[in-house]
Length: 102
Image (cartoon, rainbow, N blue to C red; front, side, top):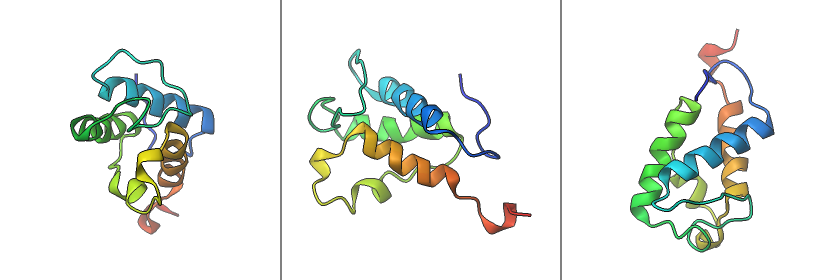
């Protein structure tokens, strides 16, 4: 179940729960998601799973999620884990365009 996250800052607990739900939906396997799981290693995500993850994250957090902004700057993209995705989402969900600030 998703909630409207567009107008309030999410707690770290809410972000982690939402990311884990999205990862489970995007996976082609039945997985128990841990923060230390790596996408390329532990979770065995391929490009199709990553595309599904982007969609699942957008549904979960009700905003566009540009995953390339998360993995492109990473020095070792194959080591990206669920915790690093939570960090990225935390920054993304705390941003509000200036037009929304009043």
